Image (cartoon, rainbow, N blue to C red; front, side):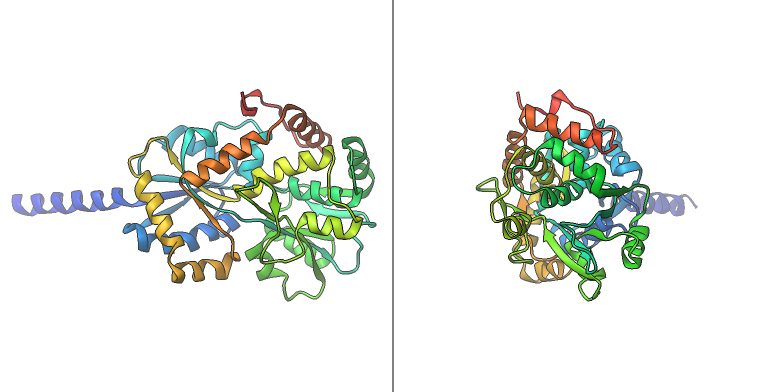
Length: 351
């Protein structure tokens, strides 16, 4: 009996050690959400190069903030816990009261993604009133719509007039409700990740691509063309319609929040000086260099670049350098006007 108990104890200890060895990726959304699906796709390929199993834990909540706060407050000291953030967390970092801070962690890697905006074929989005669903990470899209409607040199005050008179920002809809509302015509403009837009709307005759939010260029700090939607990135569409490049105080505020949202559309973090960081970074680099893994990921996500390790640190430094007091204050003021409880935070301004 004693031998049996000892054997059982050893087996239990081995099982516990095996379970403890697994990496846990925390996703701040419920299963089936865009970030959760993306994490499943990437984790399946990353396991091949990491040599360990990855367990996905979903911690959803209002504006997708609670999951990241939970990582920051309760889990970040665990070497085997990785936080998977998304664009909505990037917006919240700027304008919401949150506990997390990107600059306190080891960055592992991120996919330099973007967002696709579409409109129903029966409308002219430049002239007709837009009806669009609010949600986590969607403020940059709302601002892009107003930018395109407002034209060159758009001021903050004129943007407020457009929002008040030519825009309906519907709050409280889930992702499924938003898609159904767009399908029925109750909403006339929508936004999705590239993967989701391809899934739901590429073959839908009622939906037309309006623009891609473009892709952040790590070398220049500018928004480049989306290779998956040539000629349809935000700055290209603006110039095609208005004949000049976008500029002005509203463009500056939009570009700031757009970059924080889209550069960190899908990003992974662990605690500062984690001994597992080099292995995680190496695994991501190996995955990014594996044509088979990348083909499987790109099939679902579109072909976008990875920013890994030190390159991610450079991107974070660039993003923080784009925050000026006036542009940031304009962003917060405009979002407050639209009904978002945005806050101006001294801590995010470079010192």
